Amino acid sequence: MKTFKKILIVLLIALIGLQFYRPEKNDATYRDVAAFETETKPTAEIKTILESKCYDCHSNKTEYPWYAEISPVSLLIADHVEEGNEHFNVSAWDSYTDKKKDHKLDELIEEVEEGEMPESGYALLHGDISEEEKEALMAWAKKARENYDLQ
Image 1 (tube, rainbow, N blue to C red):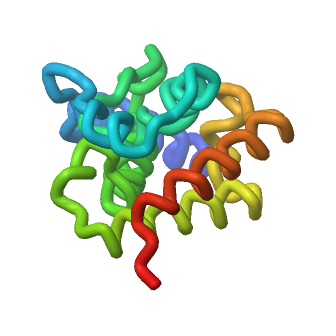
Image 2: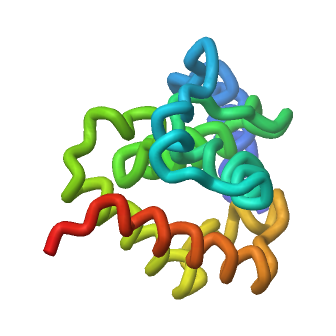
């Protein structure tokens, strides 16, 4: 019993200490998605889906929930946002070549179709997208890919 108590105390001290470490936030002054939206022409419905389910992890500005201030959740969120931006950042759309833009939209279609996006942890806390929203999102991305016909 003494060992268990010691372990609990050490874990509690570690958890308290962890609260003083804050990962860097993805908090640009504004969410720059204009180039992406101008070029890909999402409908109002698609913009709503992108804003509510995609842009937090895939743009230069994340709207953080209150629980993002609590470690270790803050560390997990920071990792997800960093990884999301590494793979696809709509705020960097202008810096992508046409080939890369086409590839990113193709990946978007694949990830949504396979149920990989939004991630299950995000969907659990923020709500998943419906089958109708998935279909609309994939149809829009397929149409947007026509801008980069690379054949």
